[in-house]
Length: 214
Image (tube, rainbow, N blue to C red; front, side, top):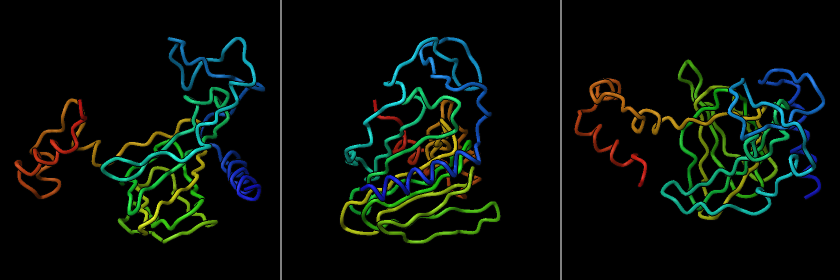
């Protein structure tokens, strides 16, 4: 466990060096998440304490009991206010057997994934439509360049988990399918039908499946 912590923190230091966020101008700028002031990031709180730099939300496995069989628990500035201006965040990825983290992007960060246990097929697609993918297992890493569509899939009939490091306090994670078929207002059916070479009825079926559950 100590070795895992050292490796993950080494990744964090590396990604912090190649920051995707603006440079900090003071020692700390703990995010005031309740502030109504709109800035690029979050305004600084006047006072802070050690709890602004602490969170135990990644200590236990998440429960990936959903349609895709995966759960991403994010330790970003919204959970750890002390991350504000530090260009750093983490996530824990938990997979049910054959679970999938669907194709998505991180518009504000590159990502490095470290497998805790299990085997994961990880891949990204370049802007030239080239798939770069590999199955990785416990102790191995894979990197997703900033902004490129990527995915992760558990290839075994057992659970799997990974830790992801981002060089942004709030990387963003738009899901490709949800962004196109569950946007509000909706993307016109004829746009999606022509783009995917399907008919309007099929578009409506996909939209119905991806619509937020009330």
